[in-house]
Image 1: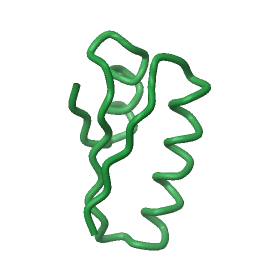
Image 2: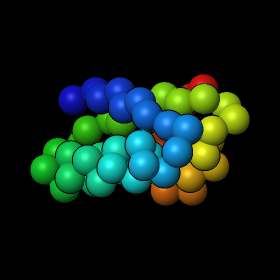
Image 3: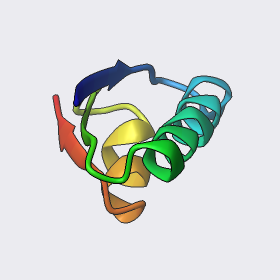
Image 4: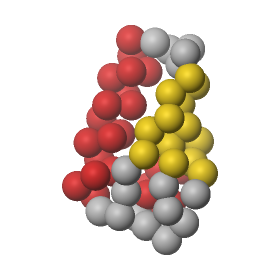
Length: 56
């Protein structure tokens, strides 16, 4: 399963997205997840620190 997640700019968008991603990973451990965001938003720092693939 391949999944793209997008959301950013503020923690109000990023942290709920991370919660959803973690739930998906628990149900589908083999899921490949890519987080798409902006290069200057909070997500550019937070998402990679969470061990997720990130592209801006």
